[in-house]
Image 1 (tube, rainbow, N blue to C red):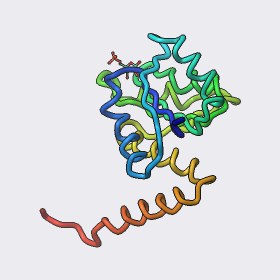
Image 2 (image 1 turned 45 degrees about the vertical axis):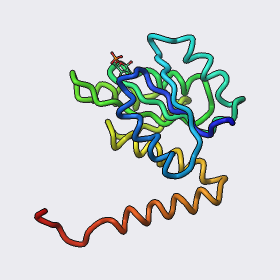
Image 3 (image 1 turned 135 degrees about the vertical axis):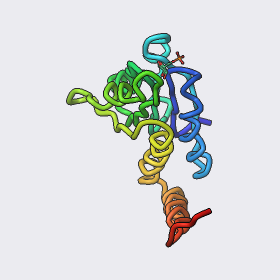
Image 4 (image 1 turned 30 degrees about the horizontal axis):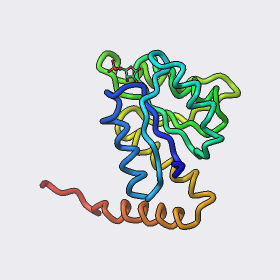
Length: 161
Ligand code: RP5
């Protein structure tokens, strides 16, 4: 079965963060694949993934990378499929390096850039869900319910516990 969303990341070390996106897609019942595709270490893999993405039926690509984080932008240059970028939090520069590498794209090749780290990865899953839900009414209902449940889980008042 062709997955709806592609989750790609530059390294195995990115998976603990990118798993947050996968968890959201699992919760919403969206099919996905997760692959290691590095702009620097496996450029041929990046090229063929981007070249085949539309033909395979992928609807959104979530791309996470850290440091000199060129994966999301290079993927956006290779496919018209919407690319959601996740800046991985790095040890050296706390992910500001990743954010700047991903967000400042030239006109013509957009990357929808999320926050640094785990929250950004989870939001990438939700962003992908919102895009896919535009053409999928059942998913739209599940996403609305997910959002309502989150709102309902927020207490009215703070607790000391
Ligand atoms: C980037 O370099 C990856 O996306 C990762 O965030 C970072 C470090 O990779 P490893 O050295 O941990 O494999 O390409």
